[in-house]
Image (tube, rainbow, N blue to C red; front, top):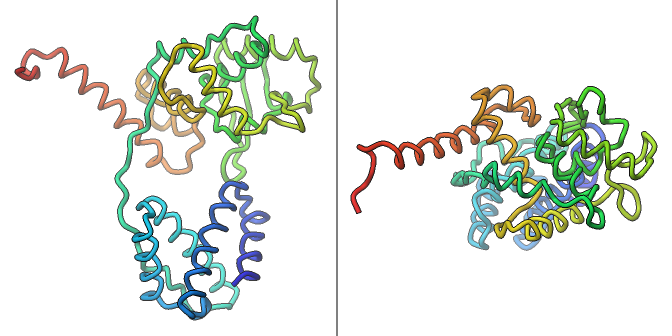
Length: 291
């Protein structure tokens, strides 16, 4: 099992070019399966669907959420599909098993005034130019945290106002930059004199780490008077929600976010409808509830 798992993860890293975060999650899922089969005295190579259902049930009793169970089953399904393709098993026991349906939570977003208050951090503070450029870029382009960390100056075309990134699955996309983000990045670049190959946001040993950005965004939000849980992905959610609210172009938002499936983007339509429902309830005389 251990040898097969390492071979499978190497395949995901090299041929599927999955991120380190995804590889770590798959490793944990398969290690959980290996631990359970060992405790049961079961050979993972000849695992049957009924036995895998028992594993899922045991994980559910252990407190795993439906969303975590879905990911765990997805890892098992991909693993056994790969084993079957290489002739290491006779069948995929996970093929017909479905995890419990997880309730879909709507993402939280900042309203436009909150977003404006967050990104307009003072530039005369220590690291102020960097912080302003980082926040303006996040909110202007809706980048993923991993995409922003990996960004080099050569990926930015500040004359045209474009940023080019490699998203999930190593898919390249170009996203427009707003004028505020462009100006903030120009000021930051001038202050550093960085070369085209240098990280846009350097850390101690190379590019800044995701954890460093998470902590910095949380601190800056508090300093700007936003006492809610602010994190980098919240800016991506806010970017998508505000673009969709203004344009109504779901397909365009999908392209900007780099979503492979438009169903992933459709969650922002629910946010838009929720906002419209609140406006309706507050404004329509026949919608107001009696106290």
